[in-house]
Length: 140
Image 1 (cartoon, one colour):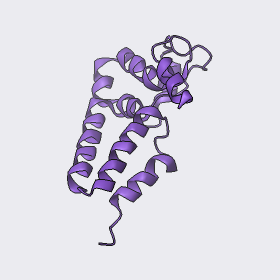
Image 2 (image 1 turned 90 degrees about the vertical axis):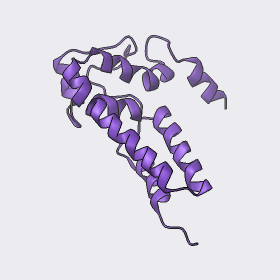
Image 3 (image 1 turned 90 degrees about the horizontal axis):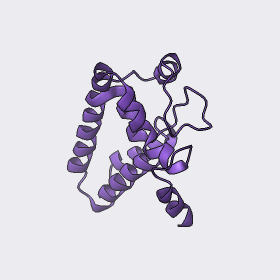
Image 4 (image 1 turned 45 degrees about the horizontal axis):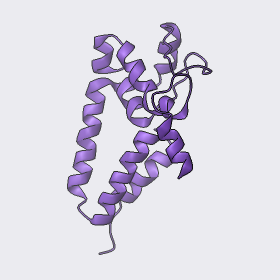
């Protein structure tokens, strides 16, 4: 619990505090993108080279090397796929919530969303495994 409170307390601090890196860095990068890339994104797998080529750094980067992709999952989706991609993601989450009306699965969806806000594990087993549990069939 102390670590959670520490992370929440570091949101908004400049330099590379864990709260700012996870929650604010992605938004700072998104703000620096041209409008067409805000709409369509820089493309999955292209973020590092885009940051390096355009020398994009934020006030939260302090000790991070240029091109570091560290940000939370929702920011990662937004920067890489733009407003179009985050819209599809929101539709996907809404569809999950509507389709799986069991109490346990809905709680898992909400926890998964909080995990997406707090972590940077997009495209890893930590991100995909809860989706497998949510979409699995019940024994009822």
